[in-house]
Length: 213
Image (cartoon, rainbow, N blue to C red):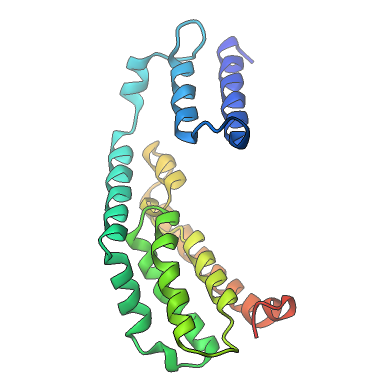
């Protein structure tokens, strides 16, 4: 390894260590990230300069995610997310379906709702309470609320069809590591596999561990 590579590895190791030990020092992950960037451009310590970093920075991705996260926050604070969840899950009449069919419909609706958010956390924070409230109002003691919420979380986590729904994917996309068509070509089959695995777990594994009745 060259000297620059060793310095970069040391800075990355320090960054990961600070991220992993935040419960001890209570430094925000964002502050750790800023520190890592400063070390990377620090003379005699870093491996690049600010001018070079500025020229190679994918500002489009940064602006896109900044706008997307801001819109998701606004969507949540103004009640728009709760309204969307109410219309999608409560007023759609899916409560009269059988439990397995209702769960699959909720998973399918969540698939499309997820496209409205660039952040998985924002999506689940906004939508999950509405889904839980809807399931509770049905008053069915045999309803596997835990299993349905788990399935919703899996659907939100596994959506990887277009770059804007995932920060890591957007970073790689901004670095021209792949195209949107490449991600769709790979993401759609993986999404189908994901739904099949959720269905298998719903009917086979989850009843065995007690989260599905």
